[in-house]
Length: 199
Image (cartoon, rainbow, N blue to C red):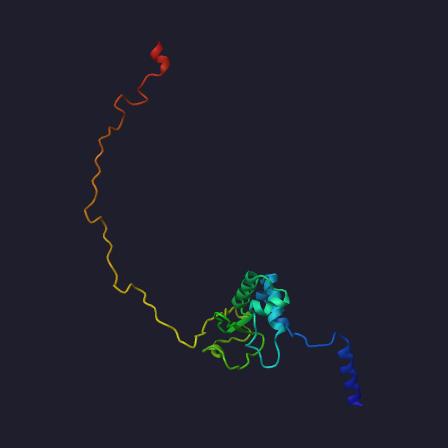
């Protein structure tokens, strides 16, 4: 009898909505201050990344134009701006940094645990912050290190620092003016007006 009731409830639940998989998006995400300040474009993009969630793939989600184009995203600029918002507000986390010619970045959503997947950039699992959208933590490339490592760049020219001279090499320029402070025919205020000359 218990099985019958349970089966009946399960059957009613299945018929109360359309069939198929669905996105479980917690209210804690939708009610967060960071979600409220997202643009409509970024909110739509969050649905696209959440749409990809499956079993053990949180960390290998895509936001590339090649993936999004068949789903109606035609503007690279809109994708880039939306992705930037989601990263800065802590809703997604970059697990692999993409590079040309054909390596797409990978992402994880932060409202559920990140899955352990081979191929992550070094430092990925350590840098992931669960529920970062509620902690004002921006997660974009904070700790990602390419496999080739980080190269050191010099902060000064290779020939060292030079001291700039305060004056030209041939000395300061002396100013000599042969002008008088007023015109040679007198100051214009002292010259009579044409009416005075006729009188």
